[in-house]
Amino acid sequence: MKIFNLIWQIGLLYVIYVIGTFLQKLFHLMIPGSIIGMLILFALLHYEPFQNLVKDGCSFLVKHLALLFIPATVGVMEYFSLFQSKGILTVFIVIISTVLVMSISSFVSQMTAAKKKAGCWAEWE
Amino acid sequence: MKIIVSILMILATVLIYWLMVKLYNKIHIPLLVPIATSTFVIISLLITFHISYHTYMYGGKWIDELLGPAVVALAFPLYKHRSTLKKYAVSIVLSVVVGTIIGLCSGIMMAVLFGIDKELILSLAPKSVTSPVAMDITDIIGGNPTLAAVYVMIAGIFGAMFGPYLLKLLRIHHPIAIGIGYGTASHGIGTARAAEYGSLEGAIGSISMTLSAIFASIICPYVVQLFL
Image (cartoon, rainbow over all chains, first blue to last red; front, side, top):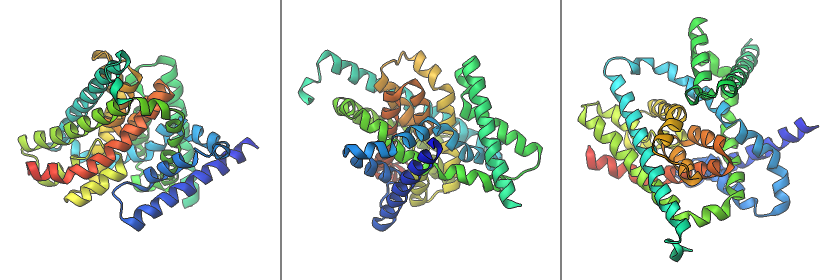
């Protein structure tokens, strides 16, 4: 019975996703439907009985999130030519830029989050 | 026939991923993160057996379709950690804004410096942003959306593979900082990786991914104008 519960819950999350996509198209928003759906669910979760309706489905999908990206990552095979001649330069650029973003954003947040612990950001609370 | 191929591709993907997770749990080398090894194995198999990506996607699209509800599901850890998010709101917003600006500027500047074609520059600019948004942004600024998705995947896989080494090197240990690093640089794939550290890291990853997507979509057209 657990599997039916899971399917029904994922179905419900899918409906929220479809609503998000619908709203995005309706108002020509720059935010994708999935993220609008996330905001909708976030709002719905404030109503406690609703939490049990999606709890198992949510933890299942979040747990296997990496698997769900595989069809998209396999798509890189269509662009192998990118790794030849001058295209390889763009791959290096993307990699260096990714290193910069990860280093600097996590560094800035560690500095500011750690400061918070020491009470320096108390005025923001 | 098509339905048999679809089911076969889905089963193969899940089986390979499951095996790669087993392997990863056994030897635990960050470089062998399941998303990277599974991608590598599947591409190798498809090439060996002369199966096109188009055929693979008969089944692959059903797994891909679950990404939408999975992103919706990220609201759950977000809700669970809402008080922490509030507490660190300033730190989170500041770091993500700084990271997003660095990501857009460094990518475009290096590409201009190396004399890359304009279409490629416009396609790689939003690489740190989650793929549906990156494709929309690229479309608006005049690049190639499909190519943009490829650069997004490169940024995602690279972050998931090398992030643990990089963060260790920089002595990043605060859960907020870990989530922000992965979410801002490597979007959803990074968020999945951050969730491996813990539920809080995953929640911060998803909020960083969301914020950077919103912020990048607002400023990207202006940054492009500035450099091109």
